[in-house]
Length: 165
Image (cartoon, rainbow, N blue to C red; front, side, top):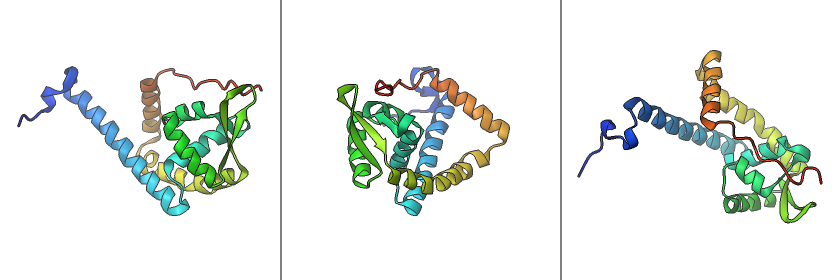
């Protein structure tokens, strides 16, 4: 059996780069697992469902095309469709035809979905503070945000072709 060491890192990553990458992955996985567990335990609401409700609450008229929503929550269209089916069964979203494009479907946050989100917000905010921002100084939080913005780049969220319809 051949053992790979940090010195054998693929594509010439330095040990520092490899450490940063692995720490990022570990931090993301750890924090999302904790946030998920808290939301499920306190609200019976998985983190992915919470994210869908947040994205819709922040959208104009609380609605987005399903394709846009998939991009914002980082799911494939088929993955979002399955998730949306569950959330719709719970009464938190509804689907409507896009008025300007018969091929498009809108996800719309219902009043029940907004109410569910409002009850879950404090749990999520508390979790983010406890697991991330509360472990850092204000300067470190600002630096982390700036660094992650730099990693993501200037990719804007897609425009909503149904917004003016």
